[in-house]
Image (tube, rainbow, N blue to C red):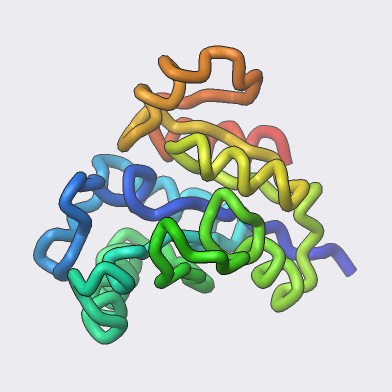
Length: 181
């Protein structure tokens, strides 16, 4: 039996427009042009998508888990309208000073995903826009990809020696993933 293929991705700055003041309500969640279509394209090619995201706004008291569920409900609904779906969302609710193992750049959420889905992380791409996404992918043994949306351009400028595939946006990354799997 052929093992299911997966792609992991960060949320803010990869799927939706990021904000320095956090995405605190469903109304603030707006998709990046082409990102919903990128997830649908992956799904069409039998690639399941899971989101791995730090959500320290919970620890900071900016929003609660019910609000986060509302934000994700909007994301799921908008994806469905484009023919796409996210199989699972894993999030770290802790703050930057937390000693948890789930906050990227630590690999805890990626490992949790792999255990739950019996996925081989060495064969799994992780699409992110920040250095901590790349570090988490590498720490978990996944294959990091960088998009220039969100913090991606800044990440590339600050770390020009990353030596990983870089794409203008999630749609470009999705096309690459489909071509290489």
